[in-house]
Length: 319
Ligand code: GUN
Image 1 (cartoon, rainbow, N blue to C red):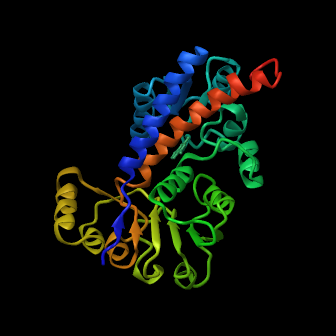
Image 2 (cartoon, rainbow, N blue to C red):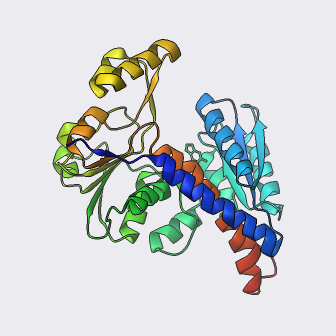
């Protein structure tokens, strides 16, 4: 039997509806409107698409959204200054600096400069540390979205062997921490892992986040596994596309290459995953849609923590 497709759309829509209700309640009950500020430096085309989607979705849900678009030549010091201004502005609940930043900017210093209470990406070391300790925190949006897909589909996590391919700070490492928190047995694999297929074939839940189109294929997947594809890669090579798809989907993808020059492929070979997995998240239309929804959820969480919970605990300021 082919795998059941885990579409991200209905789950992302459900989360956005919940967030919208929370935003309405915050305004009625507390007179608060959460505010998200997104900073983009330079003109990376993928970043432009992501940032536009983040800002537009926030506005749709009643969250105030601001977008600072700075030129690629912006200095490290100027960006740092802007982050500090945003930190000091009490009306701003969430700050997101879109990555990657231009090479001359020290990404790590910028992330570390963001007030952890406003770090809706969950990338600040304080939030990373809290997550690894299992304390409440702002959690990175993409791995948080993966968990929502699994939970809302009724896929059991506790006691299962989850294998993550990829150890990035944005996905692989936080994914491992969250799955551990959910009582999975967790293995992280990476480019130096010996005999990768023998490990990934042990996975009940296999998460691919390595940034290589169609890398995870039949030999990596156990029959009946849940395969979660976090990758987003542009593929323009027709021969590669033919290895990843068949039937109507292949025709559609080849058409996309012809008209748009490329098609989006995840880190998993979808043809193989459909043949072997029990559940599979498609690309596009899977995990990617959850990332923005979870960012909205984090923004509301940050607003509630800063403006309602902390003042009630006797803190004089939101910081
Ligand atoms: N670039 C790619 N994904 C992300 C993300 O989740 N957050 C930020 N800030 N930049 C990204």
